[in-house]
Image 1 (cartoon, rainbow, N blue to C red):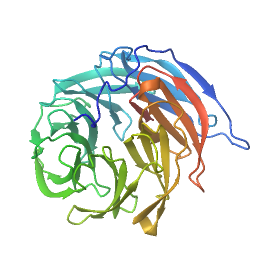
Image 2 (image 1 turned 120 degrees about the horizontal axis):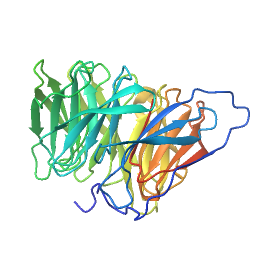
Image 3 (image 1 turned 135 degrees about the horizontal axis):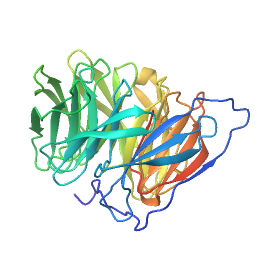
Image 4 (image 1 turned 45 degrees about the horizontal axis):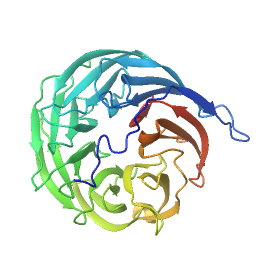
Amino acid sequence: MGTSRRRFLGLTAAAVGSAAVGVTPAGASCRESGTLYLGTYTSANGGGTGIGLATFDGTTGAITSTGTLTGVQDPSFLVMASSGRFLYAVNEQTSGGVTAVAVDAPGKLRVLNRQPNGGSGPCHLALVANGKYLLSANYGSGDVAVHPVRADGSLGARTDLVKHVGASPHAHQVVQDPAGKYILAVDLGTDSIYTSTLSATGKLVQKSQAKVATGAGPRHLAFHPNGHYAYVANEVNSTITVCRYDGTTGKLTPGASQPTVPAGSPQNYPGEVIVSPDGRFVYLTNRGHNSVAVFAVEAAGASLRLLATPSCGGNWPRHCTLDRTGTLLFVSNQNSNNVTTFHVDLQTGALTPAADFATPIPVCVLPA
């Protein structure tokens, strides 16, 4: 699809070095610092050489490179086990795979193993069933793969591969619901979100299918902390849809949609969507408009109101995430080779630029 996510769309040709610049907000106290893991494309011109390693300052937001774990191909999305002892990466290649990594200490990694996942172009991961299984969404082949996680953190052979039914399936995300009961897979090509359960033997069993507007191109969703609502970022028509969620049945019901950028904006493709820990704000990256949309959550999660669309500080903001305190927002700007950090006002949701970090083709950032 010409308007779907493209791995190399608009990639800059040259890689840039790592640097850190930080700004301390007035009156800021010492906040929690931590480690960052950076996903990239290793096979792209100017891409990285593996999983990037860095630290961040919790007060200033400044990021400092600490090296790279080589030997992991095209790690475009990363997830961390709840124990913090293991890291998992997709290998977004034609013959897709998933890689398990041991975290021996913060920023000290070693590859455990890689498993082929039976699909093409895996672009998203989720640890489910209390970390017993790793699921991967294959954009190219439009299916979801299941791998068991062994006691030592390594990955076992695939137990399932479920292809979505439709003219042009493109599985873009897989996520577990807040109660840990159902698995939801977002498919851009079929304009659908599929709800399934996972059996004790690692098999996905579909329970329902929710459809957004035809041609919307749903990319990612994020749950409200109360578990009753989910917000779907639609890549193709540049909207966000509020969905009601029934945690008992796993049924998702799409409701109202609204644009993610102001009227008259250039062509735009939403990337990531996340919800603040307190459920008061939603953040969404706008690729094309090159901004972060800030929404206020109203009516206990049932509606959103666009507050602002500040600049992302770069080009093509592919991914964003919050640190564990919710006071720092990190944005991966794929086409300008930089990660920007923002201070988050917990009362208003407003974003203030804090730091800028140069790194080759950042497509995912994972704080730990």
